[in-house]
Amino acid sequence: MTHLTIAMAKGRTADKALAFFEKAGIRFSEYHDKSRKLVIYDDENKVKLIFVKAVDVPTYVEKGAADIGIVGKDTIMEDPVDVYELLDLGIGKCQLVVAGFPDKQFPSSALLTVVSKYPAVTKAYFDSKGIRIETIKLNGSIELAPLIGMADVIVDIVESGKTLKENGLVVLETIADVSARLIVNKASYATRTSQIQQVISDLKAALE
Image 1: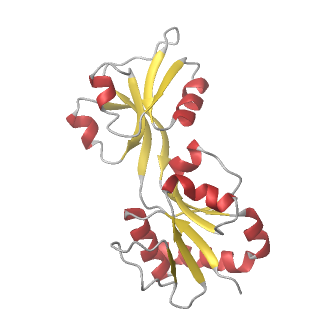
Image 2 (image 1 turned 120 degrees about the vertical axis):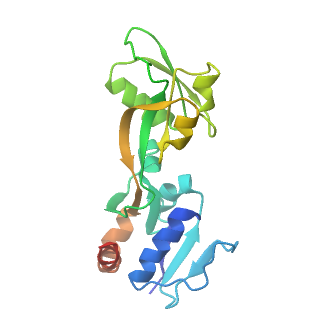
Image 3 (image 1 turned 90 degrees about the horizontal axis):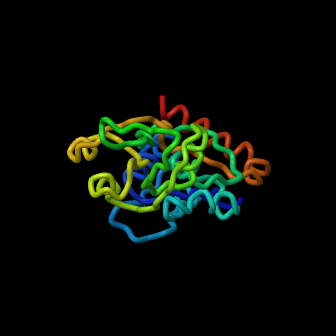
């Protein structure tokens, strides 16, 4: 039997996900956070784990390079792909929000400038509200944008809200709750149904 391949990014989410896999009976003893290995195998040599960039996980799964992927809901929302989303792992919980100064209003007659690393989600959200926007894509320290007059508001992931608060910003609207999700390649699910369902069942039990 060929290995069941799982794709994920290294980091806190991977550490927590692998702890759930271990509780589910899938142990990766050779994994440690200092390792530079991009491919490792479980102790029973049945599952192959590949480490990729978080934004690339859905593509690896959609194209069949991985059977299963672990990735944040925000990534799935920003770049939708043709996969099954089958399980909320409940880790990496945060919110995707619109944030800005406390008194900021969204007049439908004015053009709103929004900074975000999620341009697709941002456009879809404001389109649904009938608000015209100009989106500027930045990948880091976007809380700075309202402070220097570069944007009216930002769209970003918020966990504790501490960074917003320290910069005089607040959550104005919540777009979505975000956490790590398990996604599955559609062809893999059709051909390896029992194996994938067993993994999901074991993970659900580990989550309880």
